[in-house]
Image (cartoon, rainbow, N blue to C red; front, side):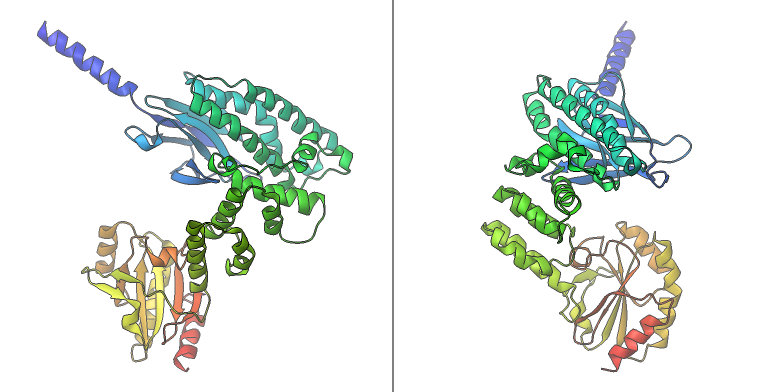
Length: 453
C-alpha cells in the first residue's frame, strides 16, 4: 500500500512538474519575396521603441521545427514576447505553465489549441489583420489595383478597431497594454505596403486609413515609446511614406521623422536610440541637428558618449587604449605597441573566412618581422576553452588576445562581422577600420605606406 501511495505521489509530482513547463514551439517554414527560406526563427522581447533579440533558433528541412523553453526564466513570465524573423513579428504571451504552439508558414501564423485568454487575443488579432500582413509582403502588391489595396487596408482597419475595443481578458495590465500597442502594430503593417513599391494613382484612391494617420498627431505621448516596440519602425516608415513618397518632398527621412514627433520624450529617445543602434550614417553629421532637442542631464550624457564613439572610428583620431588578456591571462594594452604600425585581426575559431585568411596573415608577419609592425589577433569567441585549444594547436600570429565578444572592440570599433582587419599608425591613430584582407596585396601595401611615414 505504501508503494502504491508513493507511486501516486511520484506520478502527481511528475504531472505537476510537466504542467509548469513554460515554452513556445512549432514550425517556422517561412518564405520571403526572394523565395528564400528563413534560416532561423528569432524570439524577441519588446523594449522601449524597439525589439531586442532573446534568441535565434535554427530551422530547416525536413520539419522546420523550433522550441524555446522559458521554464524557470521569471524575467519573461507574464510578458508579451514576439516570434518571427526579418521584420515579421508574431506576438504571444508567456505565463507560467503555458506551452504556446505557434506554426508559421508563408506569412500565416497558426496558434495552437488550449491557449490562455491573452494568447487567444493574439490569435484573434492575426485572423483580423492577416490580409494586410500578406499585402505588405506580396511582391505583386505594386501591380494590384488601387481599389483592391484600398479595400483591404480600410476593411482591415475597421475590423481591427472593433476587435481592439472588445479586448477584455480580465488581465487589466495586459488589456491596457495591447489596446495601446495594437493600433501601432497595425500602423507598422499598413505602412509597409508602401515598402512594396505601391502608390495610389490619385489622392482620392488613397485608403482612408492613410489619410487619417497622415492628418493626425500620432507620436504625442511618452507611451508611444514606453509601451510600443513598433515605435522606431512606425516613425521611420511614417516619415518616408507621408513626406517622401506621397508629398514628393526632397530631403532626408530622418529630418522629417523629427518633425513628426510632437512629444519631447519620444523625440529625444528616438534620436538617441537611432544613433546608438547605428540606424543612421555617421552620427557626427546628426549631432548638431539633435542637440537642441536633448534637454535632460541623463540624455546629454548619452549624447556625449555617442559623440565619443562616433569620433573613435574617424581615420586620424587616436585609438581607444583597449586592454584584453592573452592565453596566460596577462593583460595587454594597445599603448604597449606605440612606435609600431599595429595590424589587428578580429576573428573567431568558428569563422571559416577567418581561418582561410590565417595562413596569409602568418606569412605576412614573417615577411615583416624585422620592421616596426605588430600583428595582433583579437578573438571574439565566447568559449574561452575552444579559443585556447585552437591557438595552441594552430600556427598563429604571435600576439593573441581574447575578448569574449565584449568591450571596446565590439562597443567602440563596432565589429559585427568577422574577419575584420584594423590598422593603426605608429603614433596610435586610426588608419583603416576595415582594412584589406591579407590574402590580397593591398594590406601589405597599406602597411608599407604607413611604415614609410
